[in-house]
Image 1 (cartoon, rainbow, N blue to C red):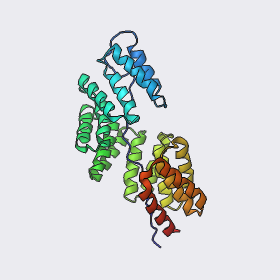
Image 2 (tube, one colour):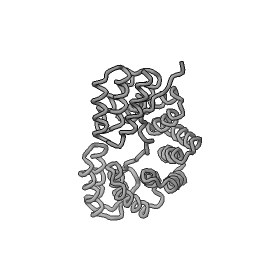
Image 3 (cartoon, helix red, strand yellow):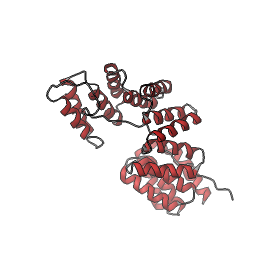
Image 4 (cartoon, one colour):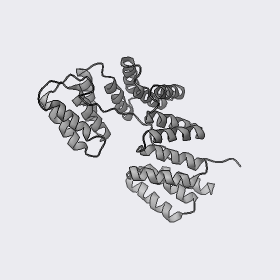
Length: 287
């Protein structure tokens, strides 16, 4: 009998961000006391949760010298991760104004344009980053994300492949290529890529969510549960994983556990109600 795959949630393609340290980037900062120390101390708070302390350090660094592209850039990264996209965009713009050949700033700014649905501008920024540094692997996988959103699956795959050739340890490239394979029904290829993403970035919660989706599609529901549990331990506020784990529980006949996960999913993101209803119906039809 032909197996019907469940319509599980797949987290969005991952735009790779790069944080820089003033002492290692060639940033032209003055020898004024405090500038580099605050830039580098701000870096030390990342990727922890204390974004506000880090941002304050970059605020101080910029006061000491408002022409430090690294300070603007790193503050932009933190603001971007915190979801303050307009402020982050302003800082990337300033960093690029100070340092026009700032490849990582273009690549990261593309992520903001992507999130805002400004795909042509995102693609332009990725192209500019690659023009500046043709071996910048993150720029290729970021361009792959944008190309995928524009419907250019072949171009996206070529970009992710290029990123992996340039940097075989780049987890976001494996993750993004895995999403392409998963959406195309290439389950074994997707599984291999999510395995590689997790190997290179064991704390990448989204990779466990997607690998769990592959396990469910292949009928390995218990393996999926283990991945969803790990994803929740890494990011307990990701609504999608509760929907997916609830579906896994439903497939195993554990209605109570499923109901608790569905309630938590909607508590975190009520907009998923329609998606959840469709997934539950598909799961019940499969059993």
